[in-house]
Amino acid sequence: MTAAFIAGFLLCLSLIVAIGSQNAFVLKQGLKEEHIFWVCLQCALSDALIIAIGVFGFGSIIENFPWALVAIKYIGSAFLIVYGLMHLRSAIKGGQSLITEADAQKSSLKKVLLITAALTFLNPHVYIDTLFIIGSLATKYADTKIYFYLGNILASFLFFFSLGYGARLLQPIFRKPRAWQILDFIIFIVMISIAISLLLE
Image (cartoon, rainbow, N blue to C red; front, side, top):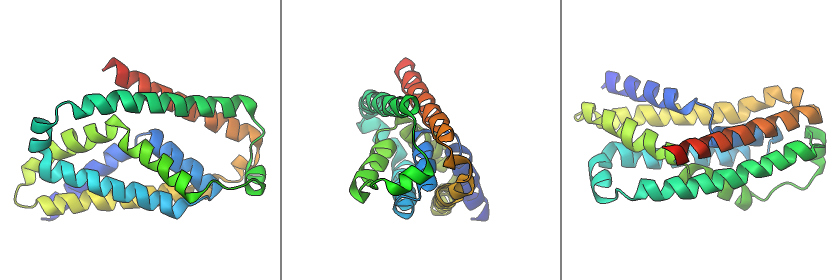
C-alpha cells in the first residue's frame, strides 16, 4: 500500500516537473496573480481525471481508440504553434510589466479556464504520460492500484499549487518589462519545440 502510494507520487512528480506548455501558463498566471487558484485547481482536477483513465482503463482505451492520440497530436500541435506565435508577438512588442498588468483589464475567468483546458487536453504529451507511462506502470500494482492513483493525484495538486503561488516570489524580477519579454520568448520556444517534436514523432 505505502509502496504503491510512494511510487505513484514520485512517478507523477518526475513527469510533471518538466517544462511544458501547461506549466508555463500556470507560471505566468501566478506572476500576474490572475485567477491563479482556479487555474491550479483546474490543472490538478484535469490531471486527476486523465490519470484515472490511464490507471483504471489503460488497456481498453488503447485497444478501442488507436486513432485518438493521432488526432490529438495534430490538433494539439496546431494550437501550440498559434499560442506560441502569440507569445512571440508579445516578446517583440514588449511594454508589459507587473505594473502595467495590474492597471490593465484582467482576462475573464472563462477565457483563462478555456486556455487552461486547451493547454491540458490538446497536449498529446499529457496522454503519453498518463495513458502509456502511468497507465502501464499501474498494472504492476493490481491489488493496490487505488493507492498508486492517490499518490499521483497528491503530487499533481502539490506541484500546481506550489508553482502557481510560488511564482509571486519572482515578482520583483518581473516588474521590469524586459523580464516579461524574455519570459514570453521562452514560452514561445517551449510551445514551438513541443509542437515540432510532436509532428516529427
